[in-house]
Amino acid sequence: MTLYKIAAERIARSRHLIALTGAGISVESGIPDFRSPGGLWSKYDPMEYGHIESFRRNPQRVWQMLLEMDGLLLGADPNPAHFALADLEKRGLLKTVITQNVDSLHQRAGSVNVIEFHGHNRSLRCDSCGKRYSRKDVLLAVMPPCCRCGLPLRPDFVFFGESIPATAHGEAMLAAENCDMMLIIGTSASVAPASFLPTSAKRGGAYLLEINPDQTELSFHLSDLHIAEPAGKALPAIIEELDQLGSEETKSC
Ligand code: APR
Image (cartoon, rainbow, N blue to C red; front, side, top):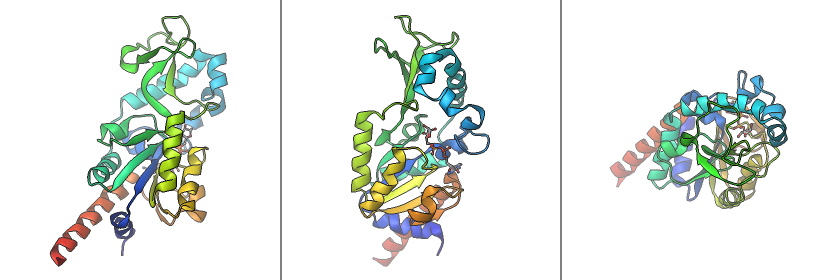
């Protein structure tokens, strides 16, 4: 029996399936992840370019990295992994996606119940006067982009050193505590508090299915099943097994 079939049978039996995704699910959309060789943090020191204090000290410098990230995100489209999760939601199997990604690709693939744990790239905001601007209304020709009040704008996602948006944090913790199965897709599970979510799900008795070509901190001591393949290959294959299961059931009755 293939790992896909085991995964499909588990998913078909689940009553409260959720997914936790990380940068790895968007790699096949052309967005490099953070910690793999060649990832964003191999080019930019995350404490120098991804920390709120660095942004406050030198917004122009941090916007150098943000501009490169912005170009990658805007040029990306959902890949088969994103569409597979949207399909699982449409079938009434997947209740919610908790994503650490800010690329909006889950929504563009059709997922509706998405918790954006680290915020998103669709708007920029001024931390001085609180004004928000839709990303598509901001020209990034002048660095750093500034608010009408004169101060620099920042993306509507979380820097290191900042708290997780309270609503997203609460909803994600609740989803993890109440699920009976969690798909953990494309994350090194190395950044808290997102990395606590699989532990919380496990404590609640959930079955953890990890999809990641590499081993992670979860693979040995927490994941019940690890499919060491790219998400864009594994998830569509699991969906195919789900369809097989469905056709076997209709044949048998
Ligand atoms: N399919 C599945 N997993 C993949 C794929 C793929 N095609 N390609 C790479 N991966 C895996 C990598 O092996 C790695 O384990 O995805 C994981 C990505 O890990 P990170 O780069 O650490 O990204 P992530 O876990 O999302 O980082 C968490 O850290 O820098 C912060 O805020 C940032 O949200 C980010 C957080």
